[in-house]
Length: 301
Length: 290
Image 1 (cartoon, chains in turn brown, purple):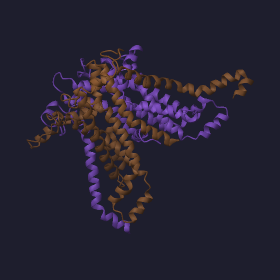
Image 2: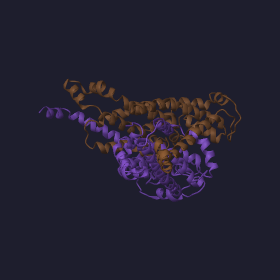
Image 3: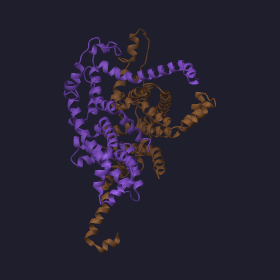
Image 4: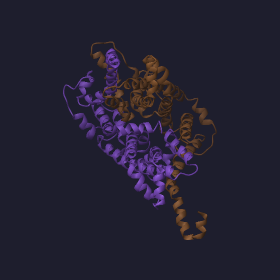
């Protein structure tokens, strides 16, 4: 290339332009990511060390916001809610998803149709899901009222109004929305398993249960990994569903980090603390996502 | 012979299997059933404990109210203007992010360079960050750009954060596309854009559909950006719907809420029913790659 440059200076401009064209096409994206992802992360990180209140301000306060954050009761509630929600949500989704995938893998008639039904909630907005479940679980008009109407006068199901149980209603709605998706991931995993091995085990007289426990489920590890990463990252980001279903209430009973960040930043005018809470959310997600992306991208090579 | 005896001995198990599958169908369809039947009955039938029953008196009044007269926020406009906002927002955002994603995927696979994988990794990480991390600077940036509280502002935000996934789709798709074809065209003298236009693009149909559906679903269903960066008159459908339901003034018109919720769900639901195969492919490609 350098030879032709010296030989033909006019061609070299065109040549160089041609060589640079792919990078030129990519450059807007690089600029956008540099500014709007990493630049913004740096900005929020910086704000978390400042005395920003209603507007960004740049007075350095060190770790002050983080120290304050961990003293706030609502943050405590938000973190423990996230742990309860996250553990239940991921576990139930995985168990239910695996069960449904195995049931659907038995050469079912109309499998495609049933799969479509199991998966459609994934196409809905969390706001829609939240509203449907909000009124369905509402003791005044929902299942409690319906069952009482059927004659069981003392039937009670008022979790959504109960401080100690409201967080479980979020698990119920979130599982309803995503379990079909986990089913699809496991089903894809099941379809990738070598059927010769299954047949061999069957001929050896292995029971269906043993077959799944010993041969099938261990081979689903990659699917489990992906499901875990996707679900964990969705759990940490959950915002819409909580807003639509309980609004963080009753009181602060269903506060999660995402709702905490929003209210401290935009309604309570504690932007420094809000930024600090966002940083913690980012760190948690990064701890899960970075190793995952690392391994996925390395495998490719 | 043996297969016959096996299938007959498995009969009871098959019955239980189908019963279980049907039970789960009911579980997943129940909330949809609740939304639909209650959007078609007068309010009194809901408040008197009849949520699970079919309407005694069928009516489309809740739908009319949700669409054009219900109180959303301060004004009694119904959800119609917000539905239109969402459409105006979603179409350009989807088109732009898909186009840029296609070009990025093309460069990253067929004109690859040192550091391309790292760059892609950095791009991909941007898909997974909690967007709480960008809310504050983005609010300021939109202000500086004069786009605060406008639909174009929302288009911009969705475009920016949609690039990661669209690049992911096209990159993984083009990685499987024979590079020899590209090289051959290069030797024949075809340039960068010509190769993209004539060779890659004509075979990109399936992945383009996957990408468009994914972006459409995500952007239509978004709430966080809509709630953070819109004004009263630029709210997308999800935000307006939430305002309709959460507003504490007056009687809670559950039937209107359900009608509104179905309206917000209908576009993505229709896409799912018409092109479910592609929707599932997009979901899977967004998590289990390769």
